[in-house]
Length: 297
Image (tube, rainbow, N blue to C red; front, side, top):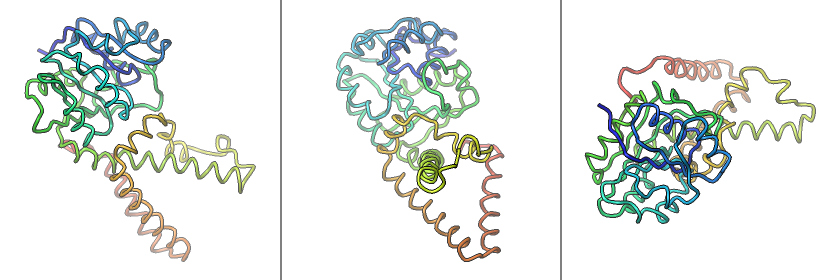
């Protein structure tokens, strides 16, 4: 039987937090779900779509009496939130999150916990370009991977409760060291977002300064849309992800720059054979993504 919570407080009732709230309520995993957020309109929508039972403006009011608190705000806000209300939590309470960065953030969050309160890092990999609870769904996590990032300080009982909660969402669970998480996700998620954002900015520069008649919407086909789909993601969220995982992201950008420079030089030299070899390698690597590995990551 799945874990059951008396009250869950979701700090940040957006796409991820709202979708989790829907599942908690519809599957009876929580008696009561309270939402905390900045936008009154979004919180009202959260009630209407069944993501939360009620909302409060003050996070301190929301976390009091909760046996589970979910941080679903941009990762740069975690420390501010925890300083504001962690002292209100009672022993036995679990604090978890849904952030795309772990590493140092997990360590600092653990350090901010009062005695008897437990932090468990989690990262459901199930986003969309659209944000807000209106885009949420109780099917969002089905078949998606969710990475739990316990440390030596993680309470086994708290970890088991969070594991059971995410199993109830029908996610595919795996466990990983927080710093290894940031290396791997930096390569397969954060770097692609950097590339997509940068490509759209480069094209905008071409339109504004070199090809005034370049209509990106009118002239582009599926290639541009597929390649840059994730550039429609939340700038606020990705700003914080890039900054909190900056060492890995910068290192991987430098590797990407080397690959771009290599291809540029092959094209500049008119090296048809070299270009084809580079493209064949890329094609082979891309085709591997179509085959699901039997073991997670």
